[in-house]
Amino acid sequence: MKKSFLMLVVALSSVGLVGCKGGSEAEIAVVTDVGQLRDGGFNQGTYEGAKGYAEANKKTYQYYAPANGSNATDDDRIAARELAVKNKAKVIVAPGYLQAAARRKVAKENPDVKFIFVDGWTLTDSADAKGNDNGEALKNVTAITYKEQEAGYRAGYAVVKGGYKQLGGTFGGGGANPACNRYAYGFAQGANEAAKERNLTDVSRKVSFEYGENFTASTSLQTQISGWYSAGTQVVFACGGSMFQSVKAAAEASQSGKIVGVDVDQAPLSERVITSATKGLSTSVELALTEFYSNEWDTKLGGKTQTLGAVEGGASEQKYVGLGDFSRLSGFTSTDYSTLFDKIAKGEIVPDGNTPDDCKVDSVWANETLFDTIEITLVK
Image (cartoon, rainbow, N blue to C red; front, side):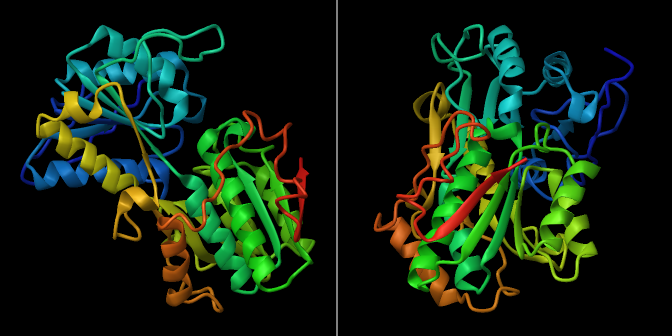
């Protein structure tokens, strides 16, 4: 094992683990994506689902952070998984599309270990030169994905319904991350619908994918968002893991800049967060682990992808996609939210999740047929 590999061990109560350089044996493993475990977002939400299931069912667990942080390579991600397997993991939970290649290799080499691919797709045993799956589905891998466009739609609708008209959005993955792109597209659609209802024709939105290639905070991103706030942008959708920290710093340095958070309810992270476009990371991970331990892997999970949204959540409004605390958002009420949720759950509103492979160069935001009430600018 490389000495540079960073192994982070979580201490448990009734099922305690003892930390050491090689890690302790644990049957549930979480391998984090780029960024920190407790990022107040994607990694943390995924981890808390595994932790919640493990503690409720007296299972051992620990998490593994690949070496080199935001600069982690496939070799680093492979090493983290191999250590988890060495430490007797029965199931490995890992979020993020960047982990696909490492997951494929380790899953093929360890067919008896199960892998839960959060924000993923049906992974196959081979891929083409560009990394696109082109083989047989791996039966020891299951994927969970979400209808982020529904959560983004709610957030966009809420902020315009709540009185904001000058919007912005910065998104991770450099325009190539499907989840971020669906959030972005849904946000624009929801904002557009609220603008129509309010008979507004002066709503605008800036969109940038420039500084989020690796989902990390940066001075460049903070400078960009500070410039947006200074130029009149009222609310920025911060979508991309640790990128939130740059938007938070810019908002708190401005006079009145507001933030829309992502993935989990990020209102506790800053008083400037007026709501968040959320998805049920913890809930869906707990569900997958429950099905695994109920011997339902072969019938419900293996080689399959679950795509989760309002319809799949049933009567639970926030089960798989939702809206975080919006008590700081005057003008948008609980009744407004329930009405909007019902329309989406019943199929009366169907936010479009079909986005280009590269939204940075092939923009859907300027589609005048769809966005006839708002001006959308793709910026660098």
